[in-house]
Length: 208
Image (tube, rainbow, N blue to C red):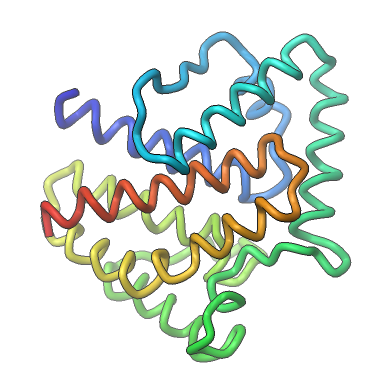
């Protein structure tokens, strides 16, 4: 795999996680996942990502011949139950899992500080707080794209963001999803996300 292929693969993985958690998955996204155009990695990457892709393949095989509207309705219900509530069992926010910060307090300001230092800002119209899983992954996507276009300082920004943020909570988030999710797409995406952060940690250690 050459550099451009590696960047494309990293961005595709981040996009998958963002699309899954940004909001209830769209009909277009679900249709694409269940279609023949989605190719999953054949080689092992790391344990959480391998397990995530295995669960994703099982979900695809179990739903491929079903009506897409029915699948989408089930995903909307599961997303709401898991992540929206009332009283959702999984809170996909960094500051919820951090013992060294207050929920929506100093921890949120620290996340926003990382964004600002790299010259990035979350979409203004997005209703979730800036430490939401999909927002943090959108920032990671920005950094990877900056690296792809030759901005070497983005490796340093990613190193700091991994160490001070994603690596501090993504394992706990994945464990909560494992405990509460009924298998399927959302657990698969959480495990792929966990594996992606592990992969990025190893890759950036060589570059930053």
